[in-house]
Length: 407
Ligand SMILES: Cc1ncc(COP(=O)(O)O)c(C=O)c1O
Image 1 (cartoon, rainbow, N blue to C red):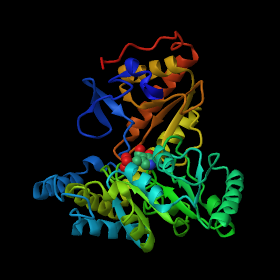
Image 2: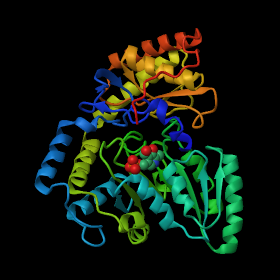
Image 3: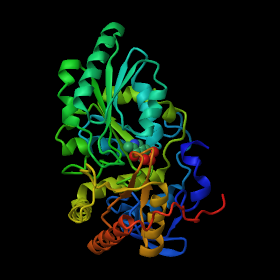
Image 4: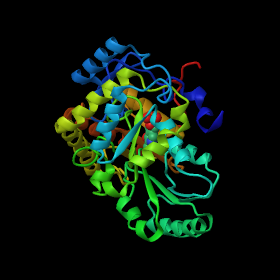
């Protein structure tokens, strides 16, 4: 059953594959009960923004979900796809951009298309699964450096340079912008300090940073004032844009090479028109309504400072992603989450070993622009309650709540 499937019978429909029902917002329904939701990457609250709903519906009415048929290269190209690419490139201050039908598949193919066996990859140890899966196809060498450890990065770069001097290949460094679990940022300036010395290209997966970080929402590279240093920028529509699909923005010759070599895009259907027209509307709102990002950050600051004031450990987050670390094992984690859902009406996600070390429970909160300061206060109070119960051993009887549905 694998590391996730081994607990399937304890958690089906509850911890795994829960059904959140109702309009996407701060308040939804779970198993018929209202819950305050902190689990959705709807950072800017665009999922249910009236202008977005209208654009999505109009596009669906005008084009249906089928158009265009086929892959971009064969029969799936439209002027709207090209327009969205131009607008994304401008937003990211890059020469060019290309759409991806699913960020995950896109990233796998970006890596596959950018490198061959002569090239060496140097990547962060906490890289997302899509990066690791892209690397599975790499026939050349790769070096992993401990998360954001710049000294170890340099050691890897030295080894990489030695190899590429022999093979004639290049070096690709890969990091995330915002790390989606812990919420800390990839140290882009730290990485870039080595660029001249070792000569590499930098690929940044900014799934969580696109729309949330930087003055205009252009992402972590804007936040860290290194937009020029990022050679290949990757963003998804699945988080701040509350859509689906993604994009890569970079120099024109690289986009050209990617366009003709990303197998997940060449051999798969183009993004349907409502996704593309919907993404244009979302991008327009991101550009013209800075108040959405300001509201997001008002909630982020209130939640994070409020939890910290109560002594909660939020690790090293510098982004909206808000991990709350507690001590305990699987049974405590499952009881806490059930208590939060059943008795406090709070729906959040939990992360346990092996994603975090043994004995650590991480409850992950995702603040959004549709949350309120009352939601924040209620959650801080509820978390304080729950921690008190945890400290008093109320969750320590070793049982796992019998909440699972039958698979
Ligand atoms: C860091 C990171 N990269 C890539 C992806 C994949 O994006 P998408 O949902 O568009 O496939 C995600 C989404 O979970 C992510 O968190």
